[in-house]
Structures are given as C-alpha cells and as structure tokens.
Length: 109
Image 1 (cartoon, rainbow, N blue to C red):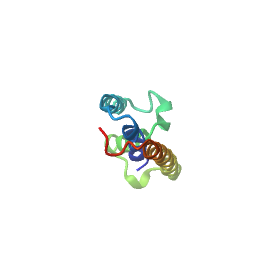
Image 2: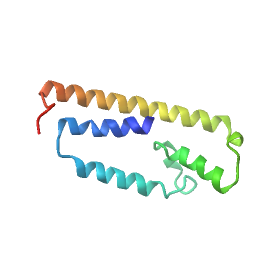
Image 3: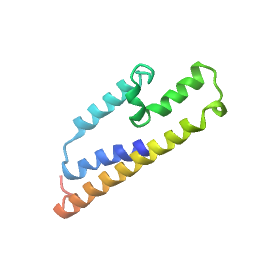
Image 4: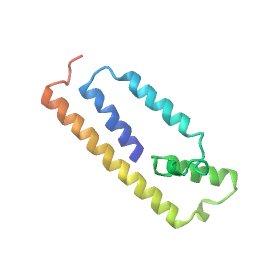
C-alpha cells in the first residue's frame, strides 16, 4: 500500500500540472528497471519501496524457502518501510490536492 500511495502522491502532481504523463511513464520505467537488480548487489535498494518485499519473494522462489521461514525482523522491516511510504504518499497527495483546490484547477483542462 505504501508504494501505491507514493505513486498516488506523484500522480497528485497531475492535479496541479495537467500534462505530466511523460514523467509518470519515466517513473514506471525506472521502477521496472530496478526490479531486475537484486538487493545483494545493491544493498541500498533495501530502503526503496517494494524492493525488499520483491527480494523476499525471490528468496522464496529461488531458494525454496517457505514463507514461514522468513525472519520476523525482515517482516517487521517490510511493514515499517511500507508504513513510512504510505505516510509519505498520503502527505504528498493531500498537499497536491489542497494546492489544486486553492488554485481552482479541478475540472479545467
């Protein structure tokens, strides 16, 4: 949910600036490219939204590890990371929405 709200926060920019489709497409491409990089090669990606969860799914699929065998500390980190990005996304979206309402941009193309 966290990454969804971060994307919604970025998409909230479209409320203020109407023509930002190319920025969202670029953001999509960057996310897609990052999914091919394992965290073992670039450890800083652990803090990027959804990358740590993707690594855990890789571990389950490749190493034949059960979901029950995932350490509790990893699950707690995943939940906290998602919660932080959820809050950031909600904040960004609300700021953009407020800005668009103040400027009267709803319904104008």
